[in-house]
Every structure is written in structure tokens, then in C-alpha cells.
Figure 1: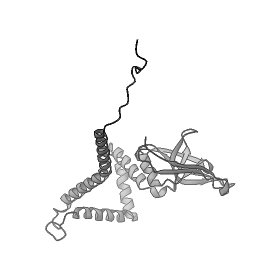
Figure 2: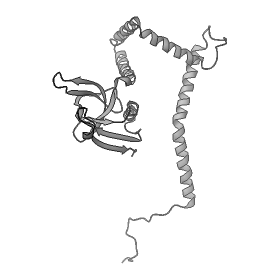
Figure 3: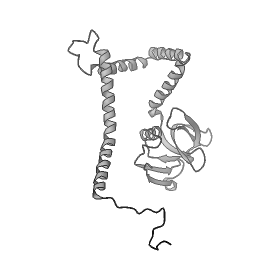
Length: 239
């Protein structure tokens, strides 16, 4: 027979950490926190150094640059920026758009190449289309009781009665180049103070990169302000 004071089997007593363990945990936590703060900076510096090194190795050996007063580290990056500017200036002209459109048409006809070109074109178009998103909203999708983030790309108006619907693009995670498009009554949308940039970070990270705060409200356009239903302000955190 066991003693009454005997602990039940399977239950381990929780030991208090020693001073040494507390100091070790403190240093490990601070080192990890410092590392996580430095990683984005180090990666950025590494990528910039790689780009500058690669562009310099291509630009600096050119006869009209090598040995000249403008032959210095970083001239390659400056040269690439100038080239991008000239290309952008060229495609802003009607002739430039026509030539680039013809090149795209040809690439879309080449097997394998058309797949790579098509995906890249969709990604760059989406990343460059922030100004086409008038605002970020939430809507019940794909069923009632669940809300998804969406971008309003336009509005559809009724010819009678002034009724309007929002055209909402609902991106998939973590690849926002594909998604769904829905026509939604304005009154059924949840308005938010989330910016397009923060929404894109949320989507690309699959919910890991969260905004510090998020406000949701139903703000129908056709009613008085006093009738608007404010949902609430939420503080977010990663699990």
C-alpha cells in the first residue's frame, strides 16, 4: 500500500529554474531577439552587395568606362538604373508600347517560355497595380461566418435607383497573382483601416506578418453616420 503523501504516478513536480538557468535563458532570448532584428538588415545588405558586384563586373570592363574617372564601385548599379529609366521612358511612348506588345505576343506563343513569361508578367502586373486598388476590405467568403481580405478594383452602378456594387478581387495565399473576383453589395463589406501595403504583407506571409492593430466596421454609403455599425478594433498577434 502506498503512502497518502505519495504523488500520483505520471505527475512530475515542476522544478523552479536555478539562477544559472535563468541567466542562460535571458542571454539566449536576447541573442535570438537581436539576431531576428538583424537578419532583415543583413539580408538586404547581402543582396545589395551581390547586385552591385554583379552589375559592376558587367559594366566596368566596358571600354568607355574602364580606366575613366567614372570607373568606381557602384557605377554598374547606376548604369542599370539609367537603363531601366530609358526603357521606362521608351515604353511610355506609343511606338515603345507597340514594340513591347509585339515581343510579348511572340513570347506567349513559344512553348515553355510562354509559361514562364506569363507567370512573371502576372506577378509584376500585380505588384505594380497598387494604385488600381482603391481600398482594402473584408467580406464574408467563402461562406457566411468567415471573412477574407479583398481589394476593391471598381464599382458597378445600377441604371435605376442609384444602387451600386463593389468589384472585389480576393487573392489567394501566399500567391496573390491568382484569386477570385466577386460583385458585392457595398453594405455587405467590412471597411478597414488596413493599407494595401499591409494587406499585401499579410497575404505574402500567409498571416505571419500581422499589422499591430486592425479596425473593422460596416459603413454603408447610403445611410447616415449615426446608423453605421462599428465592429471594433482588434489587436493582432502571431500564434
